[in-house]
Length: 434
Image (cartoon, rainbow, N blue to C red; front, side):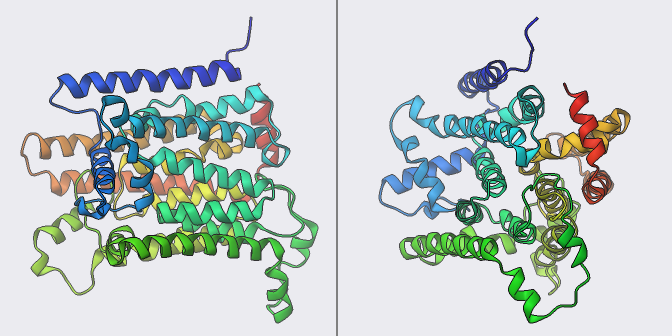
């Protein structure tokens, strides 16, 4: 009997899944009043059409992205249904490419040295996930960014640091949040390290962990790899931003970056800030001078960009990036299902040694609570949006707090797993996956 998890089987199934969803989406868009295509895709394609007419993509209201995305989607402005679907095909293809990167990373000696069968099982969490396929085929660009993030992991573990810097700068230009990975990668780039996913501790790092800070220590910290990453990432980010600013001026900065600092988005939002942001948007004249939408960044950035990298990055880079992203999404003032893809792409690197796989009961409990609290929120959102019932308090507010509490608990388990570097557990889990 041939094995189920072969490269041909998994990737053929992943492609077929997305083709089916794309075709189904065309039918639903044509015959149903409830459209399959995401509203964001309409924003992308409208912006691309403006560019095709020699105008700014920011002529399209609510376009809050880099002009590069609209440039890439320029073919969607060409006549015909196929060209209108070009972006969806591109995003779905990005899913497949991201899955391929997961496979080669897990098979690499620096990334776990799994067999192809083992690696495919973990890669299938992304490749065969209906939620991932649905989001990309509806026209969300998250899969496009997922390729950049997982390629960044691959570049770091293969010690292609200049390429990693370019990918990091490009990813941050596309979406702000990948900047949090810079701290982890910098912290992990010790000269003595040869592995970045579940690495064993280096004797030198243990001996020098408590050395007092000095000029010599600082000079040693900025080794060649760290300087290369800093220079290449900052250069890429700066060049792209200067180019976009030269073409589109202040609207580029306002819509791509500054808008997100004061963004108030109270709809379709799992965040615990949801109800408070709704009140702020409904009565702007009553809002305090201490603006919640700006202050919300403080705990989010401190946890995801400082505390987690410093505590974990030298123990497991990919796992640390997962924990960072999970924390960033959980503590974000806006939290939608599309954001879950930001950390789902990194999940296959953590699960081989996770407590959730070592204890299936714990894993089922975590998944049940994660899905259940979302379902509770969606039930209240349905009653509000479609039945016209006021469910902000206690319904939406309490369900958002419960979902947040579940995320914090899951994050705590992740941090404990990564911090304890359970090498034995990882080997046991890998053998069990055979």
